[in-house]
Length: 268
Image 1 (cartoon, rainbow, N blue to C red):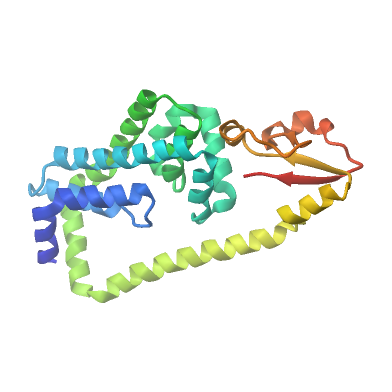
Image 2 (image 1 turned 90 degrees about the horizontal axis):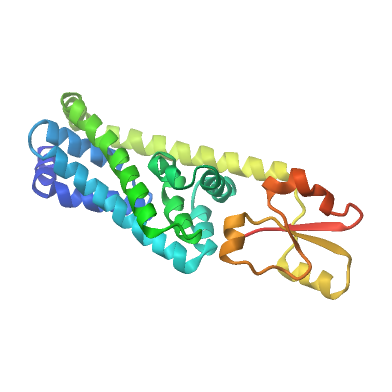
């Protein structure tokens, strides 16, 4: 444990920057423990609290800026890819877009505290064409709020965290095994919940090839493009004859969908 602390003291800012940047760029590694550890070391005078906060804020802003420009360059496909590797891909895209539709740039202030939304928000800001300066100000403030909370908690409870570190040193591998087991149980629970949810849907699915075959055969189909408006604006191409109708508009525009024809819905 003394060796770990020595490494944190000698290379603390570099480790702090790299870890926060890696988490915010999308790697599945939690940055909160590292920020709290940096805060605890600042509380004992071995690191600077202001420097630790600045390093975390810069790392967060750097990763967000990269995703912002990727979103502007690649469009909605980037958001779909990010959410596909998340634990809740069914709601990730829709929840992110809904939050942005309601709160706009202000949602970036709390994005870091919402799992999934933290990584998906910056590219979505680029997809919808949010001005660079506005994005930088709000995501920068959001990163500072996020880093300030957890770094500050580490600084405030530095004595207690050192006791926790001493306990981990005493228990050795058992503590690590317990943490790994808890994380594994959480992942397994989310996977099982998702599979049960998919089984309950009971939605008939059709492949693009099957749909094309039906259209070429002249079958009477009603195609409905249910992509969110942000996705549609970034890539407005649509299957000929399809109706663009977001799920939020369904209650007001459902009359546009004929009931006597087979209906095919598609999205991103």
